[in-house]
Length: 117
Image (cartoon, rainbow, N blue to C red; front, top):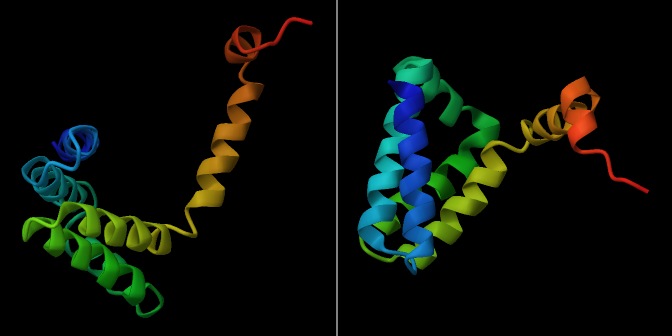
């Protein structure tokens, strides 16, 4: 259920941005994303992740952006959310990029992605 909620949340956020920052779609996507996160890792772990001392700045920008989107200022809210998201998940980016780089070592994918020449 949680992965589905996060997936639909990301879909609605993307769709809301494609439709010129439609505030209703963005707000719905934010609510689905956050509730999916709670379903995946649990309420206590979600709370402790967002409210760790080093991550309070990112949390305040992210949740402040969600509030601004809910108050129907979607562009400003999404900018604040993006800044908060980058601050919150800064330590996760090297792991994600390392994983994407290792996809070239999978035999089937390396044959498909090989550039002729």
